Image (tube, rainbow, N blue to C red):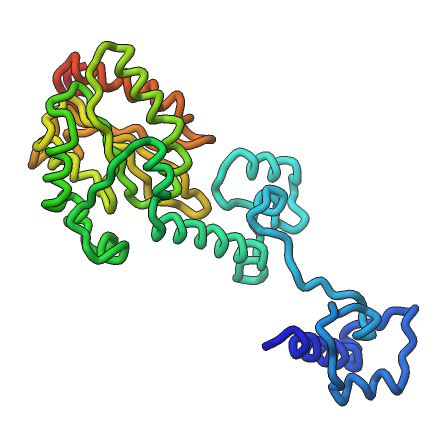
Length: 317
């Protein structure tokens, strides 16, 4: 439907509301029989914006403000709150959706639009791939897991995302340093946006920290369609003392840039989450990527000292 047809329909609806007394005509705009006839017969209408002059009704605003803008996202939706300042303080103190108000048993339109916008951010982070330019800039070669059916299979078959494909095993064996003190791997996980938002900051910090500690730093690389469990395959191939996996976390509503650093001491087939440690919520506003990078190096040194990770490391300390 083109703009002219949309304008004609809108003009007819406004006239009907005006005739029924549902809306008031502006005092400065006289009503004439010729103009009423024009609207009733739906004469050709141009694509010009609908205004009071063309509709004989007050100016209508169809476009709504961006629901994700800060002034909209954190605007209280409760009508006549008992403590307006207190409500505003609560909303500012959390990312939870509080004080959104309601219309009968339903969400207000503003709340629904924000929910839909945030859900779209989540879907985008989940289904798109990490920018190849980022990987090229950081000199990360790419390999894949046993996922062959794209993101849909990745979501349905987490078991395949925990295993490297044969080509990946061969490429890693040919291009990576064996038995390093620290091996770093990047995986897309459930959020490409998280990798793009944090990798440029955290990777150099980890590399510099490892080298400053006098430890060998393996050959970093990227794994597409990665799950945390594929750390076991990498551990079997490269036999690092400590393996670090930077991976995108499952995105929440409107929060798609959170990354985790999973770490394990001498990972091997059969290891579980009980054998790993994780630093989560790495993003600006959570665990700052620069500070998180420094903490990753400290934790790696602690693992080497106690020859353990996960539950065993907790028991050792």
